[in-house]
Length: 261
Figure 1 (cartoon, rainbow, N blue to C red):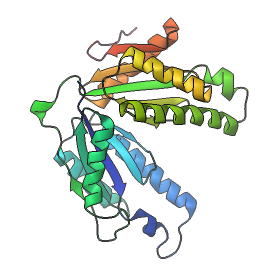
Figure 2 (cartoon, rainbow, N blue to C red; figure 1 turned 45 degrees about the vertical axis):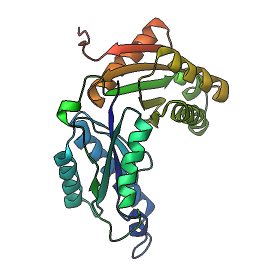
Figure 3 (cartoon, one colour; figure 1 turned 180 degrees about the horizontal axis):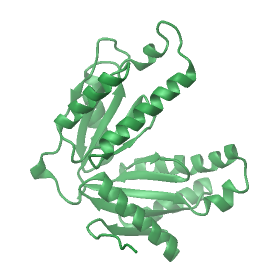
Figure 4 (tube, helix red, strand yellow; figure 1 turned 45 degrees about the horizontal axis):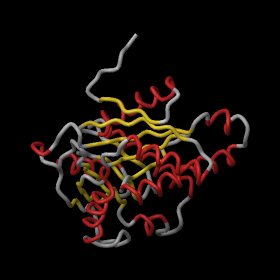
């Protein structure tokens, strides 16, 4: 059974900061956001977690395996190198949406995202080592069937982007509403979802829904492990199995080392 630990990452007082004392150059803000995300991804990724940029001023991380001290170190590192600070809320639950609700509540209770006096909140409990298991995190890695042939090599980039985003929006809503799963666009034609324990039939139903609603065909590889990295890596190999076998849903065991040439 899954037991997902999620961390809400919220930049403190970011909106007012972007226009104080005057509005800042947009590309400077985009540069700051992209560098901040890259540093978060490196920090959390080096500890076998995942981070998703979401809206950039609010990001979501899968942090199974990170303890409170890791979160404190992240805040300290960012405060030392950036003109902004981070508040972090931590939540756990077998249902990722519930875990995120708990993480969000911890931050919201400490004050508004635009409260100038609220800085570097760290609230919520991480999973104790004794409570962790090899099935805590399920990652589903989706991609679009033949996105290059259908879209990239035929349409201009913006129209391609519309098709991919419509598929993402359909999948995101369906998995959130039906299962409490959280799906994130990660570039190209790839979507990564953090899910509770779902079956092959449930993934097929999600894929069928997206095709019917958005006319976008998907396939998915699924992996389960004690942390996001291992689960996600297994999901990548399962997705390769889909490509080789011509199937739409495949699962991979994170405990099995992939073959090497």
